Image (cartoon, rainbow, N blue to C red):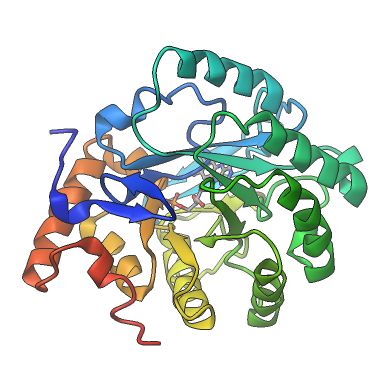
Length: 323
Ligand SMILES: Cc1cc2nc3c(=O)[nH]c(=O)nc-3n(C[C@H](O)[C@H](O)[C@H](O)COP(=O)(O)O)c2cc1C
């Protein structure tokens, strides 16, 4: 029921072996408590965090609301976590007991506090988090798109991103790819700037996307939506799909895209793959659908691939988004 395997779902991406393309997105396992459990429910990879240089309490409660009719969650967590060094030490202990069985993503962000809104301190905070996890991660995600942290999203600005990546490049290890996680709410000009900057640095791909902030009343079906926080699930799905499509074209398919936002079913995942995502993540789909969602999606994907005549999921990447 939980741990479905099929040859057609296996891929080697940037040197890492993925037994299937469905991963857990960041935010569900904020302190890396579930590293050993997640492979057992069928995930092909898992991303943990966001982890920050300093420990962080997060924003005041309440900070999570379900929007059941809109199939979305309002998230105003504000990067709650125990801090990179403490968590990394715990993970190193686990690693000594045996290698992790699926690729493990480490999502780093800057601590949600006033001090890190100074760029130099913010960059040092990212670097502290990255350094702490060098021995335990298989890939790293630089999260520049948390919608709920003090000081907003400064590193979506090209010049400031350039400074951040110049520092993080120093810690890059061959065979341990780096992704940039971006917001669905940026203009295409901002995205173009980001891509131009990333091309000069050690960035192997993009994670599309984080939560969306604007309240699009035409799509919201619940009566009450808090003003604060970012929106997940079906309220971000179309924005994420548009951005996957745009970035795949803009980067001529040369960068790896991990697509997430509103994936509840195999059809949702397949749509993102055909737009250009090589790998898929989900958070809200599993919260609403339960842990069997992952195997259900993988089973469904195998059927969809077979129906379209593809022997492997990699053959379907970008087929609906010709370069
Ligand atoms: C409860 C919750 C907490 C989240 N926390 C983080 C986080 O700490 N870091 C991050 O990069 N994304 C975080 N996200 C965003 C998700 O990783 C994802 O980008 C977004 O929810 C869209 O995917 P989904 O529709 O599958 O949930 C969080 C999402 C949820 C629902």
